[in-house]
Image 1 (cartoon, rainbow, N blue to C red):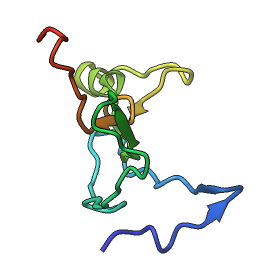
Image 2: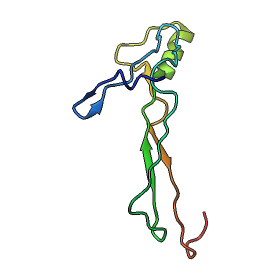
Image 3: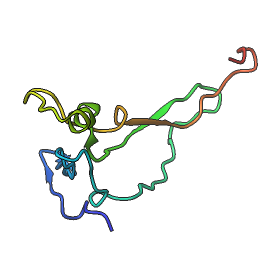
Image 4: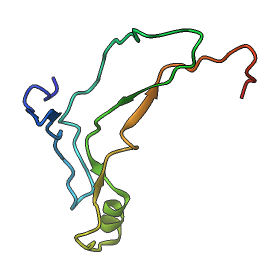
Length: 107
């Protein structure tokens, strides 16, 4: 399950997950990477009286970009400098809670 064990760490970073996008058909397969990520982490400096914010970086597999879908739909060839794949979202997901003091108004 997953392929993290096949990818090697180089220069302190894990090698890219790969790319299964078929630009000619604007499709991809979800056959690489890990289907889920699970971890437990506890903030050793957590103080319930102090506001807290956490985020996690998520590596997502490439998918067809809107330019790829348009090229296939309209039967056009995009210039080589036009990106045809992307990773959904900015690659970051925010987790955790934000503590609000009693005096702070609700939003």
